[in-house]
Image 1 (cartoon, helix red, strand yellow):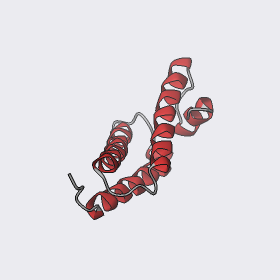
Image 2 (spheres, rainbow, N blue to C red):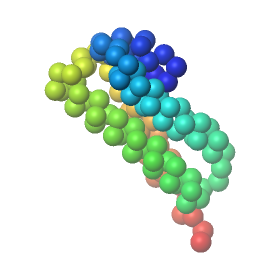
Image 3 (tube, one colour):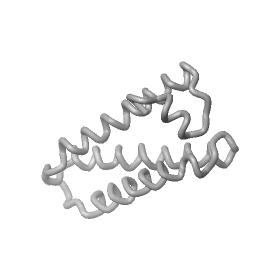
Image 4 (tube, rainbow, N blue to C red):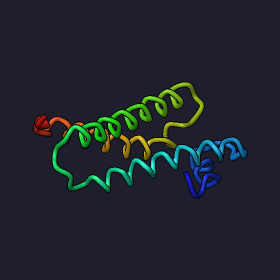
Length: 108
């Protein structure tokens, strides 16, 4: 979405206006930064900071599922257009939740 917003808009079945392209770039930039942050902390030991990062990842993807799902429910975007993204969001939500629950309490 960040680098090819017109392609993304077309895949979502929406018209690629300059405004839509800008919004898709913004969402793509946030998703890219969350992914980079996750890679940067990949091997870090359990800590309050790592827990916070996992919670933010969990919440951002859970919110995306809710927002995308409601857009489909309201008829703004066809479900088959958002289904691949929903699956990706769901895997990240589940993965983040598993790691959050497995974390050892941080020492103070």
